[in-house]
Image (cartoon, rainbow, N blue to C red; front, side):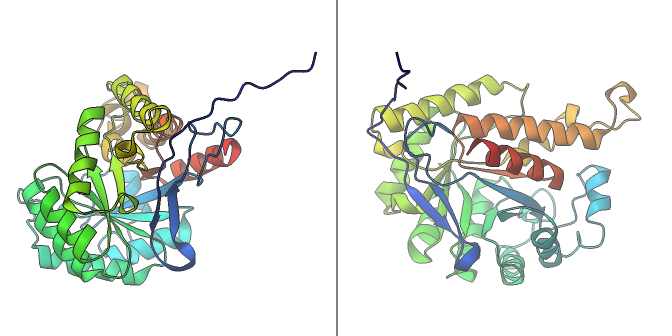
Length: 314
């Protein structure tokens, strides 16, 4: 008797979101099945991999990264151009850590000027991340959205404390894409998407950052949250959750001890560059098979490995 494949059909489908302009623009989403389940239906657009750079010298990064970018790390535009030319990244994520009120406290205008220089230096799509202080990020994102009008960037991320300011500026006034950030909870993720929609931001202009942790750091919560979000989007046709997911893996891996501890302090752990790559790859692979449509990494070797993984599975 011939084998007959059992196919699970879904009634829901993830929205397609375009980031960037021209030939290098990327599309996220479009799937109506779980990641890489091509035997069940349409897997949509191939998952994308981005690379993180900072607006200021990355003093807190481990030495291998400082050595790798020593000629460009003091110039964000040159740094962006370098990673565009020398890595396999699909997009660049500029993290505006210099805006942090507890650090350099750069003004929104200064941040917008830096973002503009970076955007003008590259052809790859640009994702803008903030310093993590909601009030300051709201002001920064508004100025950056204005300065980069027409570039079709992704602002990462709008949170409950600033979504009105970010959504109104990025999603409505200046035509950018908006990332809805929540903290590893399906209800919070849904709430942020609904709030942005009620504000007037169209679903096709929204992505989700549903939270992340490095593997080994309570990652099971991330896995279960992504599973529930994707199953609700497909099987329950929950339109408020039919949104592409982007996961800034490097933001989490970049500060965990197992990835960054110096060999002098932990000689039995071996090279921290290899550990950092291994942690990035493990975490990125996990979120991609869990439902993420794009990941942000830091090491070029991590990007190369994950791109190979995606190519083999897609």
